[in-house]
Length: 103
Image 1 (cartoon, rainbow, N blue to C red):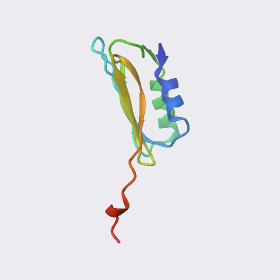
Image 2 (spheres, rainbow, N blue to C red):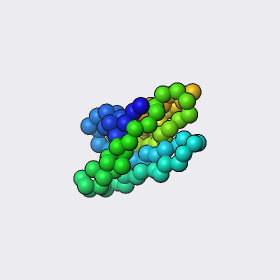
Image 3 (tube, rainbow, N blue to C red):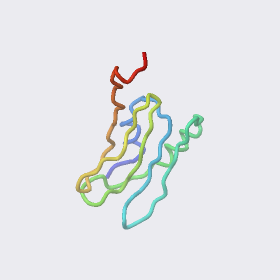
Image 4 (cartoon, rainbow, N blue to C red):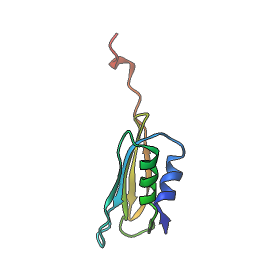
């Protein structure tokens, strides 16, 4: 069993979060999505983290938790899943090739 809040905080690890949406995606029970809107206050961030304070089964079986985290630097993360095992997967924005810049 994993705690969604602890997993989120461990994954973010001090990176600046622009906004996020995290929610359940299990076929057997419904769980609402929790949203952190951009330009959030400290109180709104704490409320979002509080809403993630629940345990779920992150092991094999059906996927329990989905979501996307957008970071201030333009990168993002989304939930990865394979055969029911799940994790946060960091996606870096690729570098723009020099030839695409106007001179």
